[in-house]
Amino acid sequence: MQEQSRPAGRTHMLDEIQEQPEALRRTLAGSTEPARQVALEAQQRGIDVIILAARGTSDHAALYAQYLFQYLNGIPVALATPSLYTLYGTSLKLGRALVIGISQSGESTDIVEVVARSREAGALTVGITNQEGSQLTTTAQHTLLCHAGPERSVAATKTYTTTCAVLALLSAFLSGGEPLRDGIKSIPDLVAAALKCEEQVVRVAERYVHARDCVVLGRVFQYSTARETALKLEETCYVVSTPFSTADFKHGPAALVDRGLPVIVFAPPGRTSADSLELLQWLRENGADCLVVTEDERMQELATTSIRLELPALATGVTPATLGTGGRHDPAKNVRASLAELLAPIPYIIPGQLFANYLALYKGLNPDQPRSLTKITRTR
Image 1: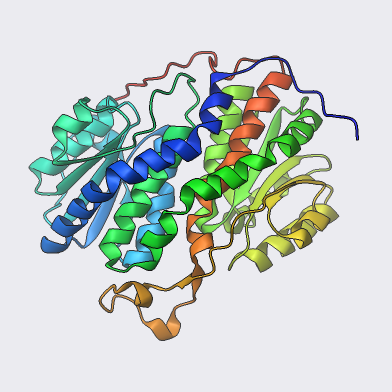
Image 2: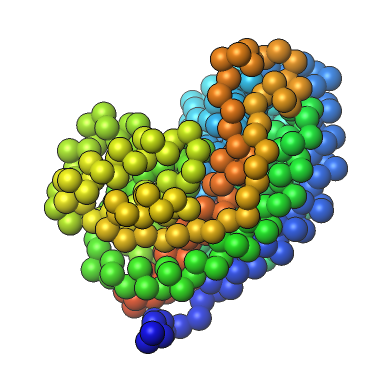
């Protein structure tokens, strides 16, 4: 077989994608005890709502956490609206809230202000950042560091996966059970396995060199993966990328599909499989150019092209009842989710990151320095 020719250029983005297994090992080593301490104080204070404040890539990590906290911990979770704090001076009643500000640099002005105002309102506040000594760390009561190491590319990669891992750790400690904490230890190996898809991505990316727009789909835990992949394609490849939950996609946006429209679908095994198969069949019948990221051969057969992941098995099933969540859920009505399903967004973003890197290179672009962007973004 003839070896696939690669686009010219080695990028910081690619280096940082490939550094993620080691970055995740550092994160788990350095953040486990701080996450346990945060969970302990949250339990002592009777926290009954979680608010996550973030922008950009960090907001997609927050979206992942929103699903995880609600499923595993039975706690309502909201994504903050920073502009209401910074532009309108809104105050909320937060005496029993855990407010988590997420900023890779720790210098996002609006996120820092949300945390400061929330602390004044009585909330327990936590900052998740890659930068020790930043404004966020001096504003929040607790800090959970990503330990990702320096990130030179403007496009965030390893800070995304390490942030997701920190949030998963916190959810595991809040649950009071062991299964998820044991599964989290496997995250670096899951990501290392996902990185083996690189040669597939090199082949696939060239197919889309002329793409100017696309749709990106995922559901439940993978919705964050769809949104983060879309952002990466927009900032590095200048491709207008519209992300949807596969459920929301059926409520109107499906009308966008025309013959040849690129549609990227993240379709891991689990409770969403039947929905994904039905969607892929519909996309095929309606002429979409469908790229599926999956471990399932059935999904591959329905797609135009695919990126096949082979991840280590995590067989243990998890319900909130098995995690000791104190009766927040009715076990009789709870559907069992696998550990792999809960943690899959972390390895599944790897193909999205690689795809954005190589597509940018095929287009003759530098993904490390997108136009009009800087590494630290300050908004109010």
